Amino acid sequence: MLGYDLLTGVFTLVPLALIDGRPGATFKGLLRDWGLVFVGDFAGAFMVALFMATIVTTGFATEPDEIGQRLGTIGEARTVGYAEYGASGMLTLFIRGVLCNWMVSTGVVGAMMSKTVGGKVIAMWMPVMLFFYMGFEHSIVNMFLFPAGLLLGGDFSVGDYLVWNEIPTVLGNLVGGFTFVGLVVYTTHVRSKDTSPKLLDVTTADRERIAVPAGK
Image (cartoon, rainbow, N blue to C red; front, top):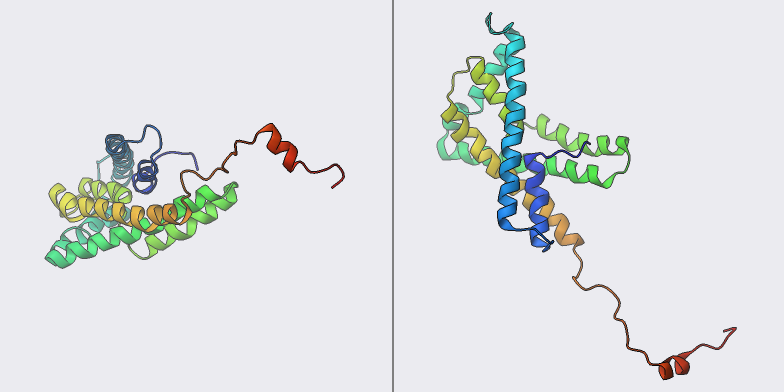
């Protein structure tokens, strides 16, 4: 709505500028964009996690309340919970990341198509609602959930969070958004580089010969 950047959105859209050969689009610039957005999104998500942890512990003076306890345990099931199944757990995590950004990026593109606030909200709401309801893995949401869980005493480590959630989720989000939304939309809508009508070199004699008489 405000034109800010979400990592899962730029995974989908930024590579298209490179593929289309837009002026100034380079692979180095693409990586720089992804890196800056990742850092910015993480900083924002961590700030919200810190605020939430402060609220549910009364400034870290008390044990987490019911909401805080719930936040603390979410990270356990979605890190060490995957680790219990080894490669199968990692594959499941990756696929959930793919499916998540398929939905989220569909919402991003849908919102871009609408010119009204109501249309943008409707276009974004359905895909985002689906990914939450289906329990898919969104790297930016997890940048809030898991740091909040660690701050609130969750029984998992930073390493568990990175290896058994954030990194595979980021990769899954990249594949899902770019492959199933960005690349598909680009492929089905791309036009030839030279689609303008050819201008003929017409001489004065040619103009007189093909001129249409007045009234016809």
